[in-house]
Length: 93
Image 1 (cartoon, rainbow, N blue to C red):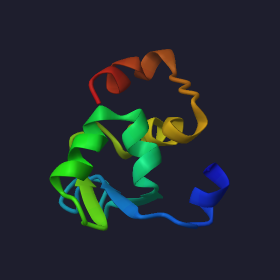
Image 2 (cartoon, rainbow, N blue to C red; image 1 turned 135 degrees about the horizontal axis):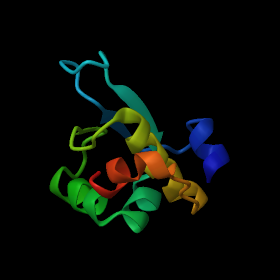
Image 3 (cartoon, one colour; image 1 turned 90 degrees about the vertical axis):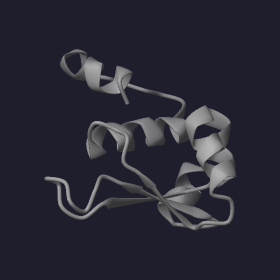
Image 4 (cartoon, rainbow, N blue to C red; image 1 turned 30 degrees about the horizontal axis):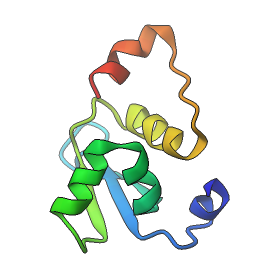
């Protein structure tokens, strides 16, 4: 699945991470598969159901784009490695 995601094959949703008005500038585009993300995240499953049919969804509730990317990648790998000094950011995401 990770290989398909990296090649943007069969991706059916783009998550916009961060805010255009935030310090990081333009949002990061994370291309993914609804079924994979929904199976691993109740929050994303609910967002997909609430906004059914939308190709892009803004996910601005995370503390940082780096944290969001790490959490989303763990949906594909099944592995979440968190540095101890940044643990609070992952627990509050």
